[in-house]
Length: 249
Ligand code: PGA
Image 1 (cartoon, helix red, strand yellow):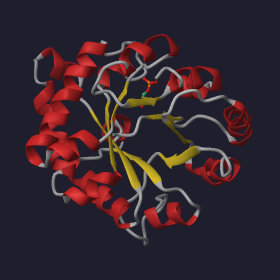
Image 2 (image 1 turned 30 degrees about the vertical axis):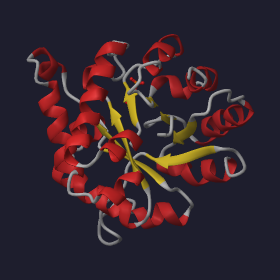
Image 3 (image 1 turned 180 degrees about the vertical axis):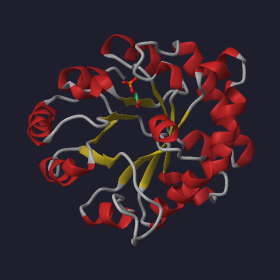
Image 4 (image 1 turned 45 degrees about the vertical axis):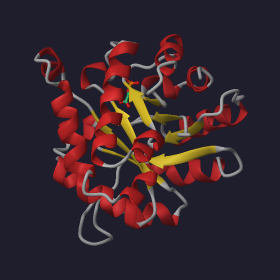
């Protein structure tokens, strides 16, 4: 059985006091679903969040990392550094990293390897742009993003990979993929895993949906058989909304 996961990507939001306030609320929230809960604060608040959530069952993830172990990469953070403060999960390949920081599939493959070398879990994001969907090309785009960054991995490494399908046109726009569009793509992704690896690997890999998931649409999206959870941006900044989504399973 694959794990259900709801992860909050705080992006470049929340200073220290806002982080403290949100963490306090998250710690008090009641979880009624069996999904794992993950939050991804900014680097400056990661250590604090990890310490604050140590006794809770909420996991802390980083939003990015560099592929090198250490060295002259001003402004960057390595997997080893994340590991050293206890953080065991990293989001890689978010469309904002791809679009604004020129992250390519080849670079992401290196980052994935670096994270796995440190025994970290990766939430790997990918998704087509509006023009791709309008051209009916979404499956080709998604297949190539996954193939280029992940298909060099051995089957045994996939237990550390969580996929997150995030159509770019649905991120922060208020426009969600319909539950059917999400299901169709997730089923396609699972078939790719089946064809390139095995039934067991395809059945055991969690595939999250991301893009304007809110309390009022989460239930319907999560009810689809191949949707194993969500990567939540805007709505994860509000504890009540985030837990309404967590509990939508
Ligand atoms: P959104 O962001 O929920 O604000 O659309 C999702 C994401 O970028 O992961």
